[in-house]
Image 1 (cartoon, rainbow, N blue to C red):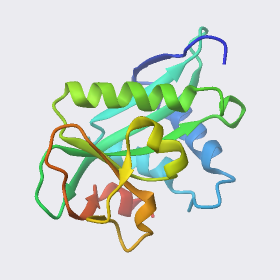
Image 2 (cartoon, helix red, strand yellow):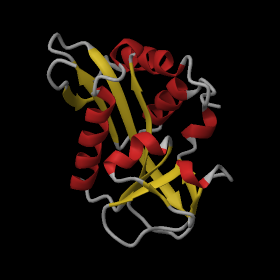
Image 3 (tube, rainbow, N blue to C red):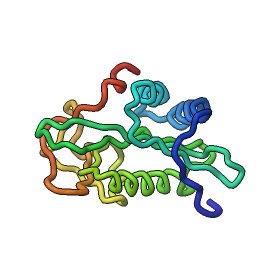
Length: 171
């Protein structure tokens, strides 16, 4: 990638571009059920997007998007958020756009006073940001190595993660 993308909050009028890039980003993903675009739309409609950031190029075209929304955890630790989905146009992938979105999103989340962030994703990608698997944290019986958390303010939570109902409504 030539230069870092500008990261800014989603603005009115970005919705269609975010939906299109999210669908394109997950179109060939073997782990995807192709609902990621609908999830972002449902989170937006429910006003449950704590952070919705886009990466734009010098012309202002959207290259990528990341969403952060509140989660609840069985141990009742408040202040936790879920990362995802994170989407980058296929032609812009592997150029640092997703990394820039995640780094900036986590920085802003911490500034908001978040205790931490959870996700279900590839450890090879997310460990670079400080995410780690924790067998005490679960999500629907999925393999523990893919359920990851980043503690910003201890203690680390334990138990089952519950995402916003928008994740279900989109299914």
